[in-house]
Image (cartoon, rainbow, N blue to C red; front, side, top):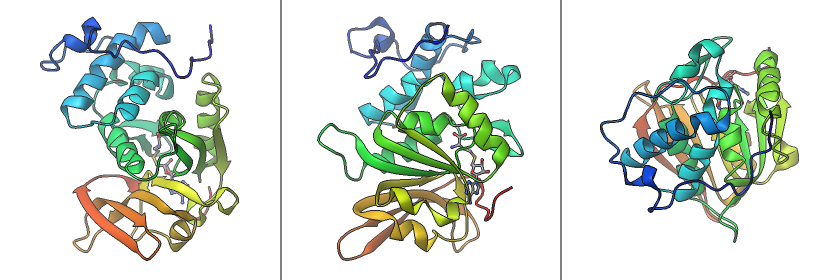
Length: 253
Ligand code: SAH
């Protein structure tokens, strides 16, 4: 059965719902989700409570994380780990980021401009991977352009996302180091792979008032999360916590 998820979807997220009154810790062991949204909804809600306890505060992000069925993006052997706070292999040596890293980065991205409806405008994602984060972004932004340099993963993401029928997600096969000029300017650019610097093309394709959220190697040789904000006068860079992302590579394969 493949039913289109309602948008904006109703979640049992109000304070009166029983699931919301449960203390976040200790978390019960997640059960293996059985494939369809309703089976895994409670498990996802537990993940959302944990994210909130870890400091994710933006209601739009928590709602999106509660809606997207992460178990549809991982291999069947890993399904029972889909809602644990862990990164998981998605093939070709790449990984799907931990839920709290996805939530944290999307929250930082939303810290920038938002349209009147509380959504971001056009967003560019570098590194589609399995497509999970693209599905989360689709719920907080008007349009999502997502680029992947590995053909195998680009096709896997297309397959994974088919079920969700997200008409505002545009999957592109190519080198994300070059950005995607046709969709520019972007209200936000988010990267799931880290290089030695933020490519100048991303800054050029960023709207004034927009933000780039990406991992980057810092002077000490460690990877950290970086936020670039473009104001009318300057580009402001903030270096945040240490992270561990796969390398940003040029070219396609
Ligand atoms: N957001 C993804 C995370 C995938 S891991 C998810 O939810 O699954 C990061 C991805 O970035 C990998 O698939 C890797 O192939 C890709 N990548 C690395 N360098 C890239 C580049 N220059 N252009 C596009 N994708 C790139």
